[in-house]
Image (tube, rainbow, N blue to C red; front, side, top):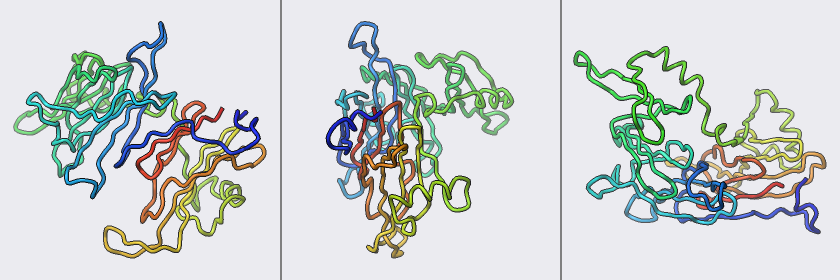
Length: 319
């Protein structure tokens, strides 16, 4: 049952909000790090932040660490530096790859004109210490408690991928797989996604012609003018609550990057009590958009998370 339903008002309020001017590009969860209480390891949210166009002349990617329960800032504005004291990837061509037991792993890029990842940098989240790095390798996945990665090596004048299994905490090569693609495929098939590993539920998406669309549309019709919805519905459903997200077309016209004029979209979210159909919380996550928002919200355990206006990470406790 929702605790806030015991209050006189049935309106839910966010538990905490973290706002940082610019764009919150990606967030992930990780446990481990400092033990604030004996035998109790802290839970963290690691986030990737990027300056927005027009905010400043300098393009900058940085990272922040929050307490998962309270949203308190542990540290902020971390930038990965190379041995010469300069930002890796010119301070922009760098991103969050994955997490594991108090570590977060960053990636660089093969080339600014190529979106392929290149480089693995393992950082201890509690101390912001780089524990190991492998600039010439590319991350594939975490499988069987190890990291699967590859490096391009010359063989007969041609570049071939050579796969290795790495220790996640030290970067030591545990096993060299070479070019055995059957073994690589077996390991990748056994890997668990970052979301599943963290216990994160991402929204399902349905649109016209897909299974469940008519069912979700009939539910959504109670809360929104379905004729104004563009691109279908996103939802997470359980026995106690349903989270519904959708793009609503407005009368405002805006210009796309290609110069075309289109009607702007607002992305709205509603938290609904499943049994009663009562709207417990409503929020506009983004407004005056020319395109569609993807994965605008998710849940972890009893908490709903979403990013509002690209700059605010919001947590709302469900129980």
